[in-house]
Image: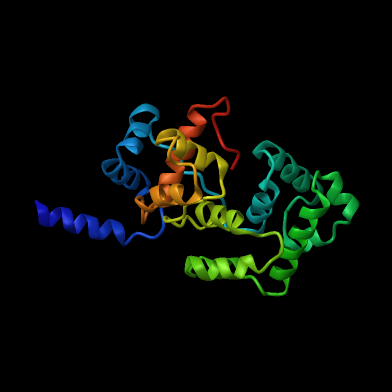
Length: 226
C-alpha cells in the first residue's frame, strides 16, 4: 500500500502541465494535503479549468488586463477584434494611435502591444517555441520587453501554456483569497504569502485556480472572462 502511494506521488510530481485529463486529480491531490483547499472543493466544487490559446491575441488580452478590471480589458479586446478582425502582430502594427485609442487602448499599453508585435515580427519572440521551453527561459525572454512584467508572464504561463507550478503573487484576487482562506491577521507580507504557496509545489497553478474559484464564489462576479 505504501509502495503504491509512493509510486503515485512520483507520477504526480513528474507532471509539469495541467490538462483536462489530470486537472481534477491535481485538485484532489492538493485537497488531500491542505484542509483549506479541501474546504473549497467541498463547498464550491471543482474550479473551472481556465485556459487561453498560446497566441499573440492572448498576450494582448493579458496586457490589456494590467491594472484594470477584467471587464474593461475584455471590452478593449473586443473593440480591437471589431477593428482588425484577427488580432495578429501585422494587423495591430497597421493601426494608428487614434485607432488604438478608439479601441479603448491607452497610449502606454499601445506602446507595450506594439513592442510585443515587433518582437514577434522580427522573430525575437517565438510563441510556438515557448511551448517546449522551461518557465524561466520564457520569463527571461518576455521580461526584456517593455510593459511585460512578472504578473503578465505568470498569467501567460498559467493560462496559455498551462504550466502547473506558478503562483501569481502580483494578482490581488489570488492573494486576497489566500489571506481570507488562511489567517488574515498573519499573512500581511509578500514573504508570508509566498511561504504558504510554497507548500503547494509543484502544483501552485492549480491551487491558484482553486483560490480564484473561492474568490469568485464569494463575490458578485461569478466568472472570469477568458
